[in-house]
Image 1 (cartoon, rainbow, N blue to C red):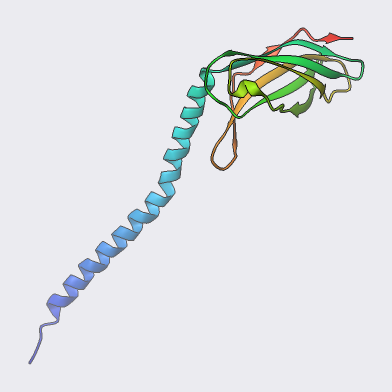
Image 2 (tube, rainbow, N blue to C red):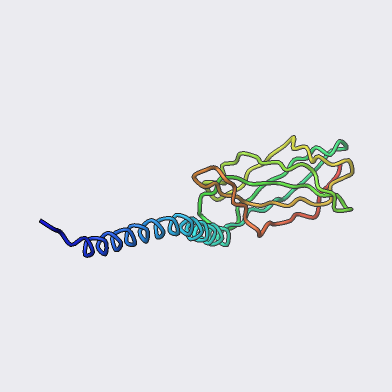
Length: 155
């Protein structure tokens, strides 16, 4: 018996084109999907940041520029992962960042911290306080709207 092989090659060609199309769609999907999930996570953290506010008050530093301060949560009931404190001197030099562990991450209220090294060679003139969240991979998402306390006492 003789078979007509011309009809079979057309079906094989269509199957190969369909298979290549499915592979190409999979590759494109794998590249594009992380862009969408990262964008929505950043929007989610941004919305949470708008609902939170933590402020420093009663900041007193000694002659070695080791400070004590009170952190007060003034807005929001959302749990966050931490607070970052950055002391700055009058020239704008920045000290080391300090991240105290605090109960105000979970409840409204205030908490006093002491023995915080400003990390500056000159007297600190202000302290910036910012809140941050951690994602599933422990990457920090710091809120852009930090609060600043400008009346640091040295004594």
